Image (cartoon, rainbow, N blue to C red):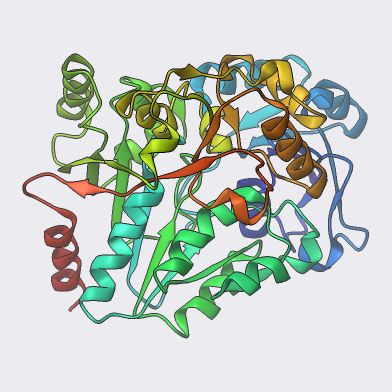
Length: 441
């Protein structure tokens, strides 16, 4: 019987997980390669043989997504499997049209076959878009569980952008572990806030192995989702964060709408800054699509380390990278802080961009007058540092989830902006999690 030739479209995360769940060691299929998008410098590498299994002794090559038609023809691909997140539905169908026009089938992958079963209770925290407030919601869930005396382990959605052979199963308990694993800025942004609160974090590539390791030291496993992707573990409680600053996106982005339709609990975040008409639009979609879901209302209030660094100053605002790039947000906590504490204005970073950041702004021109904290490589971290210091800003507002000063030498006055989830009224997350306890006992 002829093997089905498969090409997996991805971004170094969901694509590897789908391969591991569906195609590794499956003789009926031949995965001819992956394509890469969203993250720089992934294409040209290989998914290594030690992860790919016995059928791929040379590993599986990773190509540029732009080569999709050529790859389908060259390898006589039968099916293209779309496997990355936070893209408009229209984009998914454009990819489907390219695949179909070149002769291949096109598919997305269902959750039943890619959510691994755990021996421990699992709470999954996901979102409908990148930058909705998923990270602070996850931290709040971990805080509640810890206060109840439960051992909590957070398992983070994959970000394996380095040496894949060394990222199979990673455990983070201290800042030294971040250095040991050569973490990018994006990884540090997700891991450091957990470590600051004493929460162990696991991440990597082989999530079956990661889950088994996490279960050894957890009473409850918390799935800390990435982008707007669906959980890799089958949740006992599925929490999904909504963003009324982008009303309607819960119905317009893949696979965020899948999360929206699956959720047990919807967190309506950012109520402190969203327009009432936009909030009403999101509530209309909840009533139409998910009237049975529990809704927790919340805000993400900011705190500023030193407001005097902002007041009356021309400030350069550095925001979380993925939120500004494929997340598509045009402002974040740094802009809110600049407005709240009376900045004289925002400094446009574009005249001062160095190295790889020039390409970032070409790819994502909608970023505008903010600087994303890009740092997928040592070179890019140096470019970020050079860009900040070359600007004519009076001061710098650091609105990333980490203290960027640990990695970047900023030769200007600077201050950090922090934000945490604050539930409003009832129901709140604590009452929802108590429901999980009753369900499992």
